[in-house]
Length: 513
Image (cartoon, rainbow, N blue to C red; front, side, top):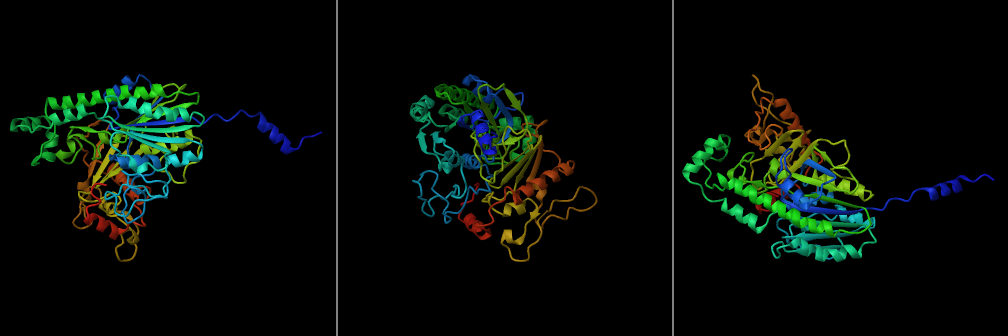
């Protein structure tokens, strides 16, 4: 007797191999750990050497979306660029709980509670919320100050441990997180651990390097670093390390990275169970260690500075530990927003409809990375790094005016200004030649706000390229940057309008956020 198609389908389904178990996923964020440059063995190498494990996959050109830990973490867990979330909104908009005091489910923060407005809107889906729908038990532990509270929503368990209260905080973490890990062994687990690479001893070394230099030292420094003279002459403060102090800062930082690796090994050793496991180690931003190049002012070159868009601050490691896979190193440009789609794929979960990143293991990389902070924007494309700064303090990257300051125009309904809508366009100066540079808006020269570097030959950003000599490349990247501001990384067009931004600026609430 012939079997019906339905019975054949049932029999075929019963003969299939069972679906593989969803893996445990552990995300370790060692904040302030910057990635080593290709061929360099510095802090990242020290961390890995102390950890005692070789990653199965390493990315050496990954960029954070912001040098601010809260913004970077929120961007990572939403898979969206900072302005597009937005991670800064006026307190009058009921967007959720203050990051420092998480509320019970369903409760929101009183209006005006969070003056720095670093919160994630309730309608934005977070990674732990989605994984929870797929049976994952989720937990977040922070070692140090609770700078990551922007994205506590969605985690079933949240724990805090003071970083400075113990000589071995990671062992304390294992003592607390271990019972949670063991009690949920029957389900897939998503554990996030957020720590810092800096220690009290590192900060002490940074402080010793900040002594005021003598006039002779300043003169000597200018002779050795003439490219810095135009940036820092006339500055009243001089917090940059000189001479041996630079080496002392680097040594202290490398030692701190080694200690972080030794401590993290405690967690790696404690993770047991039969379920397949993937561990990813990364950072929310890197650090400047007193290097003055690539910065606009001397204050941005202080040891431990991270609130500036330069390669050494934005470039972070991504180290993947997946048993059974041969080690591989990937050099294409990637972003932290790529972590969310990667983790969704690992968990076999359907991601939210809109993500700005793509699976890290997808070989079809765009080769571009976008970052933003305050009045600064940057674009990494291939080996080129284009930085933009509007030179307008009190501006936030969610300010629509930032797009105009790139040298472009916007439709009238975006800026909120009266008059008919006009088509958006980029208004950069024309190529050099007999024609005047007359296309820029009156009183505004967009050239002075850009700096372009070739990181392949100038990894420390010591010598900005001549924009007129590289006009075609510069214009292509500036145009791409402007289109990002009008598209994927655009500030919200509803809720945060021009008038609201102006009011927030007058109150000082948008300064560098």
